Image (cartoon, rainbow, N blue to C red; front, top):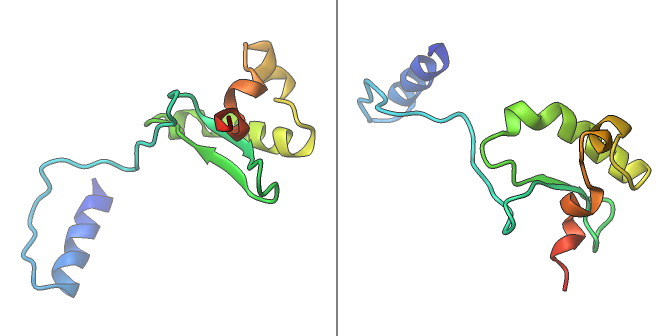
Length: 100
Protein backbone atom coordinates (compact mmCIF):
# COMPACT_ATOMS: atom_id res chain seq x y z
CA UNK A 1 0.00 0.00 0.00
CA UNK A 2 2.86 2.36 0.79
CA UNK A 3 4.36 1.70 -2.66
CA UNK A 4 1.13 2.77 -4.35
CA UNK A 5 0.96 5.95 -2.28
CA UNK A 6 4.60 6.70 -3.10
CA UNK A 7 3.98 6.13 -6.81
CA UNK A 8 0.97 8.46 -6.78
CA UNK A 9 2.99 11.13 -5.00
CA UNK A 10 5.77 10.86 -7.58
CA UNK A 11 3.28 11.06 -10.45
CA UNK A 12 1.86 14.27 -8.98
CA UNK A 13 5.35 15.73 -8.44
CA UNK A 14 6.66 15.02 -11.94
CA UNK A 15 3.57 15.52 -14.11
CA UNK A 16 0.52 17.74 -14.33
CA UNK A 17 -1.73 14.81 -13.39
CA UNK A 18 -3.67 15.12 -10.16
CA UNK A 19 -3.74 11.40 -9.42
CA UNK A 20 -5.27 10.85 -5.97
CA UNK A 21 -6.27 7.18 -5.95
CA UNK A 22 -5.86 3.85 -7.73
CA UNK A 23 -8.93 1.74 -8.39
CA UNK A 24 -6.97 -1.47 -9.05
CA UNK A 25 -3.31 -2.46 -9.01
CA UNK A 26 -1.11 -5.35 -10.02
CA UNK A 27 2.52 -5.88 -9.11
CA UNK A 28 3.70 -7.60 -12.26
CA UNK A 29 3.05 -8.82 -15.74
CA UNK A 30 1.20 -12.03 -16.48
CA UNK A 31 2.96 -13.73 -19.35
CA UNK A 32 2.02 -17.09 -20.81
CA UNK A 33 3.72 -19.44 -23.25
CA UNK A 34 1.52 -20.89 -26.02
CA UNK A 35 1.17 -24.16 -24.06
CA UNK A 36 0.75 -22.25 -20.74
CA UNK A 37 3.82 -23.97 -19.23
CA UNK A 38 6.80 -21.95 -17.96
CA UNK A 39 9.77 -21.45 -20.29
CA UNK A 40 13.07 -22.11 -18.52
CA UNK A 41 16.60 -22.62 -19.73
CA UNK A 42 19.02 -21.68 -22.48
CA UNK A 43 17.75 -20.35 -25.80
CA UNK A 44 18.32 -22.92 -28.57
CA UNK A 45 19.73 -20.30 -30.97
CA UNK A 46 21.69 -18.26 -28.40
CA UNK A 47 22.78 -20.51 -25.51
CA UNK A 48 24.32 -17.58 -23.63
CA UNK A 49 20.76 -16.29 -23.08
CA UNK A 50 18.56 -18.15 -20.60
CA UNK A 51 14.77 -17.85 -20.59
CA UNK A 52 12.62 -17.43 -17.49
CA UNK A 53 9.17 -16.57 -18.83
CA UNK A 54 5.56 -17.61 -18.86
CA UNK A 55 4.88 -17.81 -15.14
CA UNK A 56 1.33 -16.57 -15.74
CA UNK A 57 1.00 -14.65 -12.51
CA UNK A 58 2.79 -17.23 -10.33
CA UNK A 59 6.29 -15.77 -10.64
CA UNK A 60 6.59 -14.74 -6.99
CA UNK A 61 5.47 -18.17 -5.83
CA UNK A 62 7.55 -20.16 -8.29
CA UNK A 63 10.71 -18.04 -8.51
CA UNK A 64 12.89 -20.04 -6.08
CA UNK A 65 12.33 -23.31 -7.95
CA UNK A 66 12.46 -21.57 -11.35
CA UNK A 67 15.79 -19.90 -10.55
CA UNK A 68 17.37 -23.14 -9.38
CA UNK A 69 15.92 -24.92 -12.40
CA UNK A 70 17.42 -22.42 -14.84
CA UNK A 71 20.85 -22.75 -13.23
CA UNK A 72 20.63 -26.53 -13.38
CA UNK A 73 19.39 -26.54 -16.99
CA UNK A 74 22.20 -24.20 -18.06
CA UNK A 75 24.93 -26.02 -16.10
CA UNK A 76 23.86 -29.66 -16.42
CA UNK A 77 20.97 -29.80 -18.90
CA UNK A 78 18.62 -31.31 -16.30
CA UNK A 79 16.27 -30.06 -13.60
CA UNK A 80 17.38 -30.11 -9.95
CA UNK A 81 16.80 -33.51 -8.33
CA UNK A 82 14.06 -32.24 -6.00
CA UNK A 83 12.14 -30.59 -8.87
CA UNK A 84 12.42 -33.75 -10.99
CA UNK A 85 11.33 -35.88 -8.02
CA UNK A 86 8.14 -33.81 -7.82
CA UNK A 87 7.37 -34.57 -11.47
CA UNK A 88 9.25 -31.75 -13.18
CA UNK A 89 10.15 -32.53 -16.79
CA UNK A 90 13.05 -30.65 -18.40
CA UNK A 91 11.72 -31.23 -21.91
CA UNK A 92 8.37 -29.69 -20.91
CA UNK A 93 9.93 -26.37 -19.84
CA UNK A 94 12.83 -25.90 -22.28
CA UNK A 95 12.48 -23.11 -24.87
CA UNK A 96 13.39 -25.48 -27.71
CA UNK A 97 10.04 -27.25 -27.33
CA UNK A 98 8.54 -24.57 -29.60
CA UNK A 99 10.90 -25.31 -32.51
CA UNK A 100 9.32 -27.38 -35.26
